Each structure stands twice: as C-alpha cells, then as structure tokens.
Image 1 (cartoon, rainbow, N blue to C red):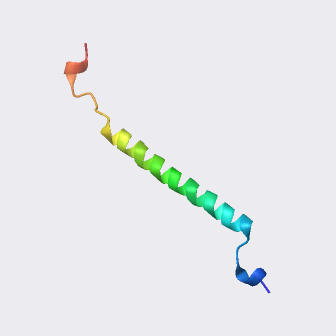
Image 2: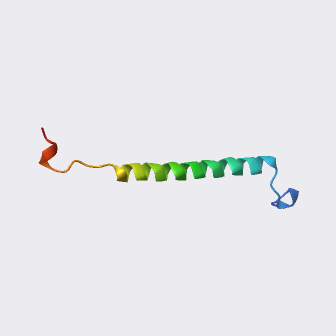
Image 3: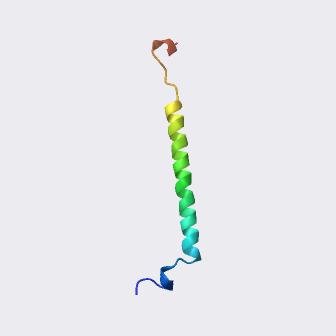
Length: 51
C-alpha cells in the first residue's frame, strides 16, 4: 500500500506545491527581464568612443 489517504494531498503538500509554483514563475519572470535587459544594452561601436 503505497498511497495513504486515498492518494490525496494534505495541507502541507498543497502549500509546498503552491510555494514551488510561485518560485518557479518568479524565476521565469526574472530570467526574461534579465535577458531583455542584457539584449537591450547598447555596445560601443568603434573608435569614436575612444577619447
């Protein structure tokens, strides 16, 4: 008998799943923001920038 409680999740399982999902979404959003900021940076173009 592997599953107790008819295979249902108790309060801790639901809570941990919620926290994990929120952390995953937060990391995904922060990753997209970091990628957009990284790709949006302008790089120096040639000798006009050297004093």
